[in-house]
Length: 479
Image 1 (cartoon, rainbow, N blue to C red):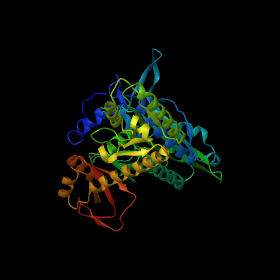
Image 2: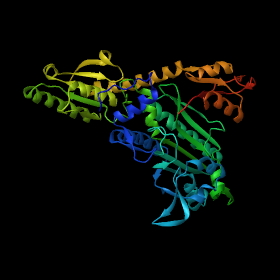
Image 3: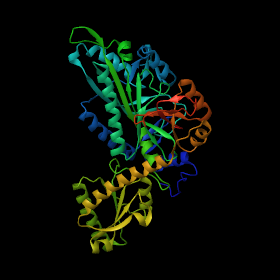
Image 4: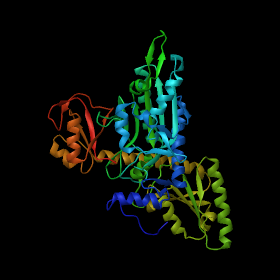
């Protein structure tokens, strides 16, 4: 890690972000333009995200499966809106084994089409339903403007794909998975999100309805952090996913898909990070505690390392993820800065005086300097650490929520709106459609992030058209 300071978020948020990803050892650039290499520290964070989600998926009856990376190109043209939505982003293979392929293969941009092909073979009767499958994989979308984690040509994610007998079951599934994402964001990542419905112009290509969770980043831009799509019968009709119902009549299935990707790592960085580096939410942090032993000579070294080994064992027994930084090639000050950059929630220092007093110095990453530092007894340290981790989670969530509230405005005119979206989110009554959204985007770079599920009720006046409006929406600039 370089000793040079990060750019501040106020100076250059974009450069702060990029430098932080590289210097906190989360990821690196790949030799292929637009791709990234996720390094072990970043991958461990992704594994913790996976585990937290996977547990929730299995609790709701979903099972994991694996589907091919290559999809026949003809599959994508079966659902017209879907192919139109994805065609500019496709990577296509035309040669295999040194010979031109009879049919070009698309490198998976998402799996709805190959899932549709498979479900059509597997589903014959109402007894075969529902099918609840999730995939953990990577997909390729040929992005022109890329940014580590936020937008890369290849990214990792989970994609859920389900088939149901009725429209109501499919809608229940779509909303249930949106709730799963909301619960994960709040209770694992300490990120407040707004669950809502996408407008027609923002919904997934080929979907009947798209739901989203939207989060405010540290520069007040919005990040779409997870989506859940009710696909209606569009893909079922395109791929002939049919079943015989209880009356022995043929019906089309109702399908859904939903996904959350490594882009969520970007959400964690930009929601919680500060000018010193990352601040990891404790429940997802690769290391929850780092212990730094401090000694000047061999006489001090033995007792200090003995105490450190004992403390480490106690924390591991208490299910705390702990790292001992026993590097002897760098100073304690360097280590403090290094782990601050990497965002480890708690740092514990153990020196000769701490050994004598049976105490440790405990520093919280979310509270810089003296405010976050305390001296606590070694006895009962594991309980103290667990309580502090819980407190850090709550503090991070409440801080992010207060920031979102402070930067969400309610303009009533278009002129007010234009100045508001320069600096935050606009929560407004809106009665416009695709054309109005397109004009607003062109003039302000702000889009409808979602129609929040939680509505104030009643009616208002649309800030743009002046017509009566029945719902409030959130406009913001976004990633």
